[in-house]
Image (cartoon, rainbow, N blue to C red; front, side, top):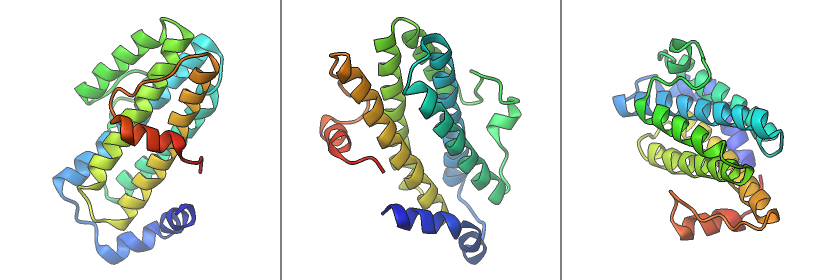
Length: 192
C-alpha cells in the first residue's frame, strides 16, 4: 500500500496531464479545505509545542508542514487559489469559519493541561481522517486520491502517537469524531 501511494505521488504530474485538469466545485473545495485543515494541525501543534515542549507535538508539527506542501502542490497543479496564502499564513487565522472555530476551541483545550493538549492532538487527527475519507469519496482523480491517502496514513500514525503518549500517562483516549470501531481498527494498525 505504501509503495503504491509513493508511486502515485511520483506520477502525479503525468496523471494530471493524462486526465485533464477539470475539477468539480466539490473537488476544488475539498483541496482548499484540506490545505487549511493541515494548517490547523500545524498551528495547533506549534502552539502546543511552545507551551509544553514535548513530543509528539515537536515531531508531528514537522509532518504537518509536509502535508500542507502536498496540498499546496495540488492547488498549484490545478490552478486554484490557496486559502493559506490569502491569509498570509498567519498562525491561527483561517478563511474557513469552521476551521477557525476548531482552532480556537483546540487552543483553549490544549492550554488547560498536557493531557488536554494531547487529547486535542488526537481530536485533530480524528477530524483529519474523517474529513479525508469524506473528501476522497468526492473524486476519481488518482493524484488527489493518492495524496489524500498519504495524508490519511500520516494522520493514523499521528493518532496512534497521541493515544500512546496518553496511555503512558494512564489516560485512555475515547474517540470524539470517529466511531469506536474505526478508532480501534486504526489504533490496532501498524505505523507506516
